[in-house]
Length: 130
Image (cartoon, rainbow, N blue to C red; front, side):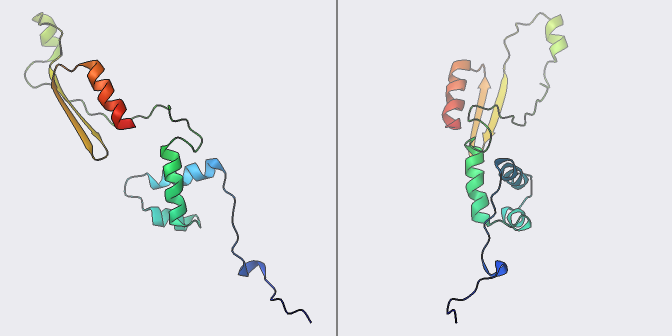
C-alpha cells in the first residue's frame, strides 16, 4: 500500500501563467479612478501583492512599453480674465506670454508664474520623472 498522500488537482495550488498583455490589462484596471487593487486582483484570481508588483513594472515601462514612452497628462487651460488673445493681437501687445503654470505629479507640485525659462522647467520636470 502506498503511504504517500494523493494530491488531486483541486488540492494543489495552480499557478497560472499570465501574458504580458493580460498583466497590463489587469494593472490598467487598477489605475481607473476609484478602483481597488484588492477587488481587481480578486476578480482575476490574483494575489493583490502580485498586482502591486505588476504595477511597479508597468510604471517602469517593463510591461510591454518602453520607459521613454510618451505619457499623457491631464491639462487644464484657463483663459486670462484681463486680456483675451484676440484683443492682444488688435492692440499689438508683445506676444511674450505672462501667466501661471501649475503642475501636479503625484505628491509634487510645481507652480511657475510669469515668464518660464523653458530649459529650467525641462530640467525640473525631468528630475521629477526620475
